Length: 346
Image (cartoon, rainbow, N blue to C red; front, side, top):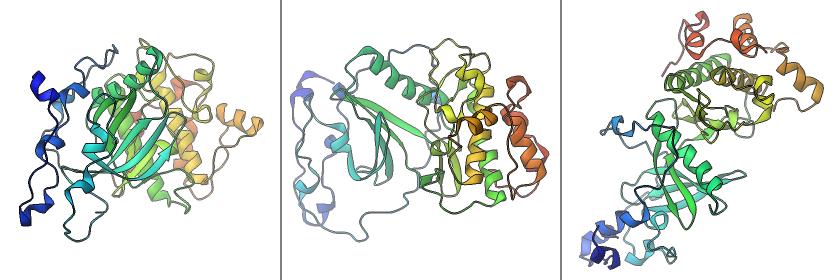
């Protein structure tokens, strides 16, 4: 982009009666190049195949539209009053914030409407400013892993990311909810539980074949959209070959070898975490916090789960085996005989 265009402010489109719905010019919808430096992601290790993502992929279904009828609004309604120190705010100009839908130790997540296409998305924003190199590398690691993974129907889709006023913004697919006990007050049937296991195993098979470990599988990172289960929360993702720093996820769902700093079988750590997550989901409560119960699960002593078949119980048992070599791979889980039938395998 030439210097002249960088210094010019976007102009309003003159009103023309019935065209009042065109509130901002195309120039305002487009993100200025200077907000997204070409070399803003210097982290080595992940190799993006983002160019292979289908260009004609449809816009994700919007679960709701904030405007039920066509209304005429003053053009200034959608012009944000806050401008970032580095120029135009991509977040404020490209999106309209609907509500906050989540908050963690490092990020906040908002449900937003993208002004240009009218679709709902989730935008995650770091709470603290990324002022140090380690903070920036941690943020870059997640978005680079998402870009390297590409599209899969059982993975929360990544769209774009950018740095604005020393904060990382990440545009993601908007989902209905996750499988935390707070969001799923009613018990799932065994049929739905098997759907969760199958579809998340499909996501793990996909990333493991790309040489990536998730290391943060838990109910809060399993999302639902239109009845499809999707794996998200890639903040701890790393490479299976141990060439990148390993950052452990939630200790409740981590196997003993990871807690003991043994990173030789990171893919099997994901399998343990998925088994522990399924145990959590079936019980509809958090994993036990008492040290004795906690240790028993890590040792593979999984208590009987009422309401599930013996075959399902046995599969969860072997997924949580303390020996990572005895745990099945994601591909072996998908080939298990318990899935032969009328499962929703989308």
